[in-house]
Length: 328
Image 1 (cartoon, rainbow, N blue to C red):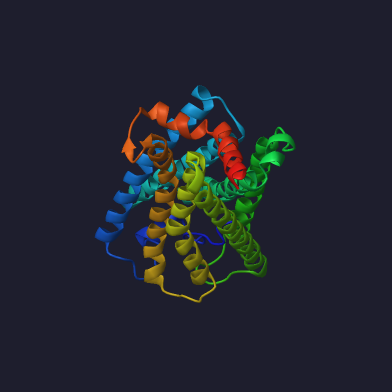
Image 2: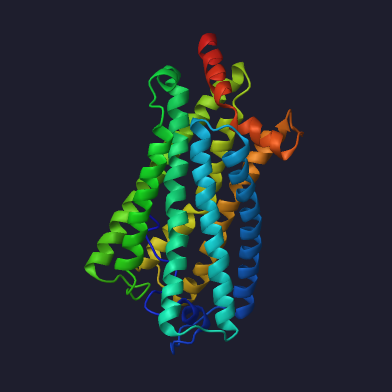
């Protein structure tokens, strides 16, 4: 659902960034790329720790509810993405230092790493949309949410989103793997990118609309009573995603379809999109902790208590919405 690849596919990734494929393409200064790589690795490391903590608490310490199923899957997707970021950048670093695998093995390793990278990103977007849409429906139709919502809806939705993301990632990675980036490739590949780009834009629009409705609901609720931390965490996560990821991904589409064409910009963009995507994946655990630990504009409580305040807010949602409707 990225609608683009992040690096040329007709050569190995090590050759792309090392300039060893015999091309004369302009590449940004090594110092710039090294600096961006270091920042990206640091952000990814912090994100791995944060998402690991969230996975541990949601998987083994905190009772599951309708909301935590989505958040657990989102944390797993972010953890997968950040792990692949680490692996790809370390692999590129080793390649630049002269430690290279045979061409056949290099292609296999990079195909696997890029598949996991794109899968982690692709599944994270619809999961965030699903959380936002469900919370929006909960705020607008609390009776349906309590009485008519299917018991295993969260689990079923997550399974379907993982399956869809695997399909989309497979189409992008294996149908378009021979395309000479950034020029549009074969007709099947261009069709794949048009379909996945349309899906990406549709998901973004639904996410924005549901988040906007949720934000308006929070504003109305806050007049009568304290809004749920759950709502605040969702809005914050969506805002971070829209700011950090969407502009770079849309720019990637412009590069692919030659609206913007610059080889120098392409190589620089490769690291920038890694940086922004890593920042987005690393931000969610810290959002949960900040929202859960903030009480009357003061931080209080341990990490465990902070996470429980956010993830055990299911009953508070119905109480908050019910109180608001009683006042109106």
